[in-house]
Image (tube, rainbow, N blue to C red; front, side):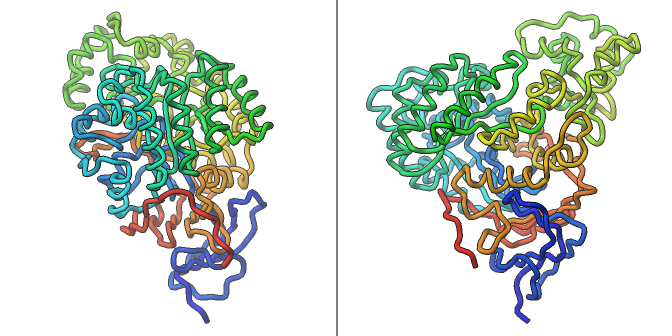
Length: 575
């Protein structure tokens, strides 16, 4: 009897094609799937998948592991949620190309835009690179648990070419624009999956400055599109407020027409513009009808802030009494907050001005929720802190105070920032079902003090395919295809995202009935001891990357088969 590395036997296969689940064995050898069906070969390792799901590994196209990938061997939290490929370099921020004098500029940019502690970046980044190709070489030299792929970020590119003028958003000269075009071409030829930019007022540096790329001239963007055309490969990733929607959508259409390359943009339902997503969808569908490869990245749950004393933001940040102790260690802060009279004094104070975002959420009790265990990311309005306070006759700030100081100050409140204007996910469901959207926006590796959406691939199975009670659900084959084959194809990674002979052996074995998210919590394991939100899940029986088991029952095996992915990958011929 022939031998192969692994045989997964008797599982319910959801193979990434969107077809109905079926019972099948899967044989893996030398990092590749070699047989699907009734496998007679013996596995050097046999995995009994009876009663379990077998799916491709998740392909997450919107992450920010640009720093972590240079110092860490494990791309957590993504890899503990069954993700086997992550794409970073999104939103126009990253660390290459870079000149020595601009290291701090890029750190401050990443710290502000993606809420990754500057101290962790300063200690963790070695800066053993200048060009994007150098950076790719550094990524390739480090073993890791899963595959990583990178895009060239507009912010780093602009600062590299223009220096301080680029950081200050000054117009680029014709020569500088030509240099950006050449550098984009060279980066894609060195293995970048594409180019990313941000054009939103929300994204700011740690100093509060607007990002270098906001308002970049059309001529600059058109030259970059020509850079992708020159390379003959790559994708465009776009973040925008779309406030000038005619111009902005017209620009991305022009870039796709010039480059001949696919483009995806982020789309959420924001409270300040609750109907903009409908207009964007109309234009998106029209562009697709003309044959243009433009897609919108959407997320299957609210973009949710975690409000807590350990995190970046909570409703009391601007109260003078809290500000006076904010620098103290958590235990000392909580002890002070629980002293007699402190709560009454602080709650009577008027929040200080100068932080409009914090001040605005501080009174939005109707959008604050106790996340619970297991976490509830589609809470009903009557479950809000505001509704609870109204029923009990309490001051809502008192409830907030009690939640935040619970369990030694480790409590969190959930604040659904986007995709929850109507307090349900029905509009998100419409976005996800649109054939011109992609599952994305997990932001793995980013917003480590305020947002923990990296677990959304797991949530797609638990909530949308099994547990949802407040509306329609989604079919399991659709969800699996949407976060495996569809995302892989969107990035030109045609060698993965399917369980079929010849494809890369990235596989999840899942106890679907018992798959469950745990509540987010704070850990302090970044360089310099900096914090980050972490979230685990129960139910991943095994995660296999490149034919090697990297997680068993949620525990890392120590295996590090992950590689740097350089550029487009062709679909395999069947074994």
